[in-house]
Length: 249
Image 1: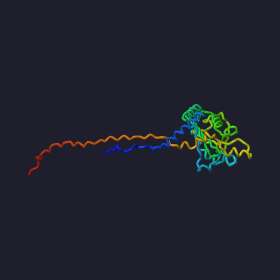
Image 2: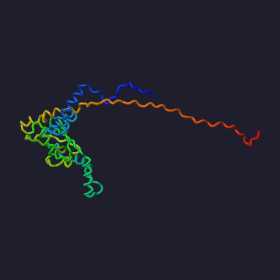
Image 3: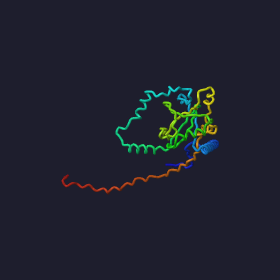
Image 4: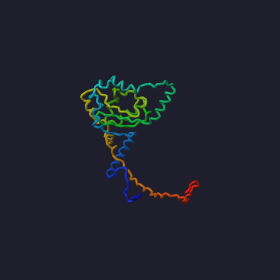
């Protein structure tokens, strides 16, 4: 086996140019500044064109009838609601629930806005939903306008802010929809068009796609081993054949 030690270094990914490195450093600086200001890692992205056919968060696009719980929804969710085959004591159920809860250490909440932008924030499942509303009040472009969040389907407004994310079923992640809590009037159209997030937060959009710098990894040459030829055992010296006594010539 011949090893060419003069071959170039192997890279996991493409070598980053100076511009890529500068963009990556600028992106890290923006994320760090936002985290320092709001106390959390925020990510902003725009929903892909494929998902434009999904229900939007604007109240003007779909009526409440669209979110009614249908028999089809019931039968689709029925298998997940079946009870265990065997009865369990309250102590066993509580122990199993505590074990399930301990395995979930974080929940990613995505807030979808009517302008097709999404804000992703990670919370601890034991935190109250009030912490999500408090954060939104700080990152919204118009925090003075009342708003509410809801889930679908069916359309259900999130009202109990004293619940934690685990008890509310918003684990290990969930998509909630944002809407201003305003009567439908002509002047409300200006609020529904956006932007909904502050300019500083919107500046994070697309920064997750910036590649991170990757150090080259040098591959060490494989040791060359030469297999020793098999050692043949010496054959025993040949013996002169002995004529049997019964054989008469």
